Length: 327
Image 1 (cartoon, rainbow, N blue to C red):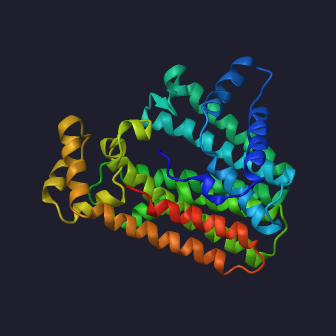
Image 2 (cartoon, rainbow, N blue to C red):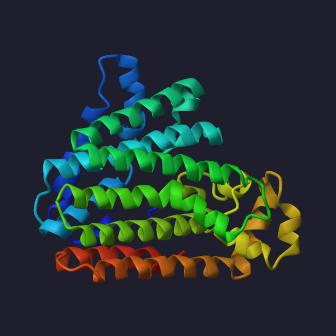
């Protein structure tokens, strides 16, 4: 959703050609002898995207080896993580009954829910196969991460239209559905670069806090941005009963907002709810949480000895750009 991460801030020369390698391998990984399955599987791949997760994996590898072309293992690890992300999007669109994704018809809208679910499963299977090619440790990590994604999504579904959702429940959900894969992307980049355990843990903590920061900012943008910027209707989470951190904060100060929630919001009621949330300081309070995670992400890198300073500086700029842009 939105342009919440600017990869150009990294200033790393190998990133563009290595991302081209990711794109090539990503498309090859979903190619299938069955023409229909291949068409469905490549649908969202062809729609594009920022490819944040493979980019983070590559940057973790650069941090370990210096800013030079990444190994084939680092590229494959990034592709595996992106396939997990894409597979989860296929499933999310079924849950949300979404009609579009990245400016194209969603798989469930173009074909059917069953096709979307099976295609998502196929992408997860391809991701698992690629992870296995990198070794048992990588395969086990990715399997755990897929479990975390499912757990985070289930935690979110348990609180749909729940005006009593707590900040702790929100944090637990986004830890699973977003931060886990960010952390794993960074960890795999370090694993295939054979860094030591303290460095590996530092890269993982960086990815975790970046993922938490990213999701909080993403949720703020859902309330403050336009349909055109987001590529989907603004306020969609609020309409669907997903009460994110700014909503949770706003509920503490607005009886009017509390009286509106608990059912889908449309039209003027949705606009009014968004206006209340934006006006009462809840957005600033949520962004303060994002800034705290950004600080912790940068601290994780600063505390790791032996990482390339040019790469860590680029990663810190990337993090800082998340929370200093205009929301």
